[in-house]
Image (cartoon, rainbow, N blue to C red):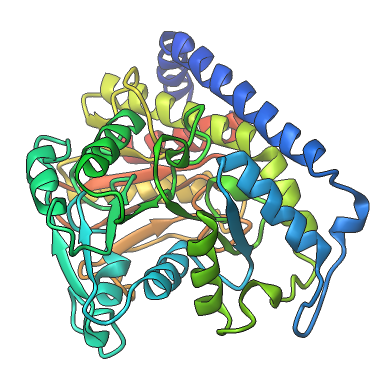
Length: 411
């Protein structure tokens, strides 16, 4: 057997208890699958769009069609989908530098953003940060895992803020990820007092986890990665930005150069993989959600704290497990690595990583380096010793990975 019968019984019992939650996920998957299919058909996707361009990348009809498809799926005026983005953090960096100018003010209303933006913003000093270019940063923390609507309304009524940033997923923080109903409520709160401020969403890990996206509840611009949800485990790198046309143009001119903007950027044979990844994405995200739900129930049954709980509403693919014990945390992550298809023989250990202040353990035996839609588990080594698990290209592989992790942790 792949794992001991005792572990199989533990996991199968939990699986039987979460069937109703799986049905909810399958309903969301069908809605998003139809959305993708309609976008492909409505934009007359053809074999000709799978071609590649090199050099400057002029007149790449595949790239242009991909961006029309993304805009349709998100219900936005325009989009920028490029392999030249090396990560979501890079896309966020380009977006912020594209939209902000010296003396502008940006506010994060969901607390401190993800660690990799600390030096981008200037929370941690860096000579190339927004702060170094004269952009001012303010922060309004969440209160009991919800926005501080009163403080946000009061601050935004003073119309000297250029951009509001909202991070949908929790990152490495202890807070919960933010649901779409709360995002919609805070956008309405902002718009009551300020029509001009740009509302930007870091949408990482959240795509296709619900039937709609933040762009459909009033957000101006969204940013996300292609090696997370929308790449479906097939896109080898890249990121997307979707939103209002004039904002996308500014971001494009920061990614490339003023005067050329979105008209350049060779696709180097990536078009088919981006499109095929998007085609599979609703199903892959559903598999990730099922894996997360199963993990939550298994670990809860074993006495560990989990968030979200197995039967709570989800807004991203991230599942946290609170071990309260450094060694158990490390062993669980190592077990996930053992259950991976690639580098299953490797043993991850905590180490220093660029952009992080604590040592971090990262388990991910993935076909694409750093892919968070493939089953992975990572954690900063700090109390209360939370593991952040995400992904699962198929539910069956996810289930087997969780079995292996639980077995190794319990040995």
